[in-house]
Length: 487
Picture 1: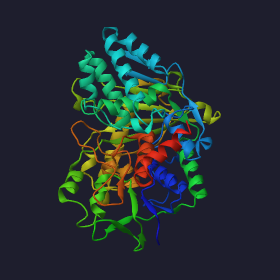
Picture 2 (picture 1 turned 120 degrees about the vertical axis):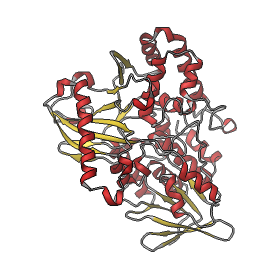
Picture 3 (picture 1 turned 180 degrees about the vertical axis):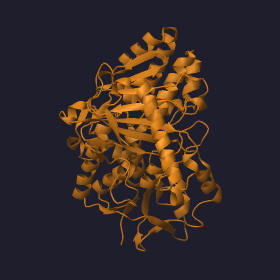
Picture 4 (picture 1 turned 90 degrees about the vertical axis):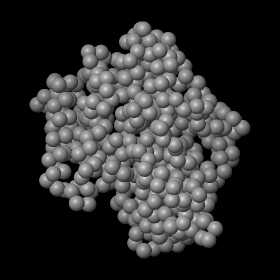
């Protein structure tokens, strides 16, 4: 078998890159080790509840938003039904006795944060202003930039925490914005580059939306377009070895079933920790592979799904973030997020909640997937963790006591079993001021990296990463012009 381009992994970045290349005349194949496309994005049903493991809400789906432009270029935007979140409060942040509603739009967010922290009014204004400046000067956020102005990346690396500190923000405000962001990208405020924080949070602040059928809506839109473009998809098939020629140029991929696919261009989208396992013996310098193996992960999530008779009014149409008032970051394991399924899409049926904790409990990491995934030790750990999360939830939402049942739970090992992501890392490798980022290009000619570990996490980050990796093959200047036409 021979293909112009091969995509390893069918997450959002892989699907985006595959479709983009196919639209531009490439014969493309997708290699996916799981039995279905996009295992982290696809929903599953338990009881009467549709459970979304990876997509709860997003930004960028407004008319001229980043995702709308990319999906319009991919000819799939019309197949994705986005739903605006509640304008006066899309997220609620709780810390101690303080409740902070976040309205949609930068002005509303600034006003709410200022009302809660009047002593930090100037800091809040500077924070919002800097986010807007970064958005205005960054491609894929501002599609009005010309190709000559094209530059991705910050002028300097400063953490969110240090940036807020430079503005004179109060300690609790720094803690709240740090913890809130950590749920959306998996990195502490003292490590996340402010540039990355600004891009991710800017998308949510500006225009947060849910999607009518959750992750399935996006997956099905991709599936239709991939079929239209005759992209071949090999499920239950893993890449076993990358093969190169004497000049270290990509030559072929050997698959787990023994078949070989010849190609000169390949985009690798799984967790980078898995790359050394399939790398050719002399394809990379040992220091590069060692660096990849030693790079730090984001924490894995522990998620509990509930079926309720009725969603309480205080969480209807919004998400809640119960944050910790502990001053030491390592003591904040009690923080959790509650993602509410929009009641309107259930047509009066029973409704669901998703409770997520970024799991920093090292117990899960001591369990071997191969030997202990179904062991009594693992099951006991999962039951204890689920019970602990439910206890904290009931202390926060006592009105649901006796009115729900647990329909499913997922530990970091659950996520690892479905996606292969090392330790079930919620957002891949850390985007950290203490960690040098990986580049899309590699030392093997024709091999590129993509995904949330490479650029930034989430539906947005993965989509942009897929575009950029494909642009290394097609050429960014021509591609940028095509995207601009879809504004």
